Length: 101
Image (cartoon, rainbow, N blue to C red; front, side, top):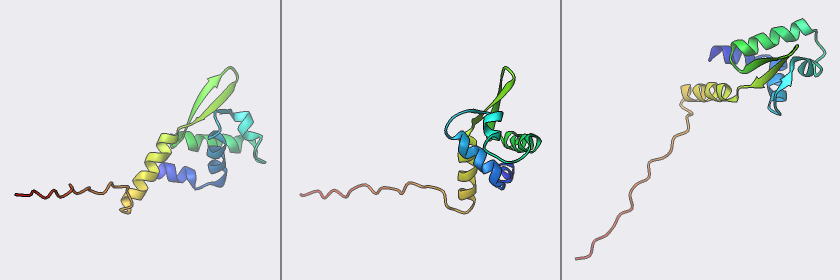
């Protein structure tokens, strides 16, 4: 879980994840959204892959990134649960039935 939060601590990486919500994008398409060098973006992609938040797929000369939303959801739920904020379904009491004699 700590790798996920390390990855989420940077605004550039959070923005990459937001962009990937719209669907898979190539490294070049993602880089076009940022005013940083390609090696810097490559380092951001590496952190996201290490945290298992994205899946990289080779397509010819391009690398296509896919968002792995389930990993993010699990980390956030685990974090919430550690503070007792987990979603619990309240127990439903059985209705009382009166029996006439």
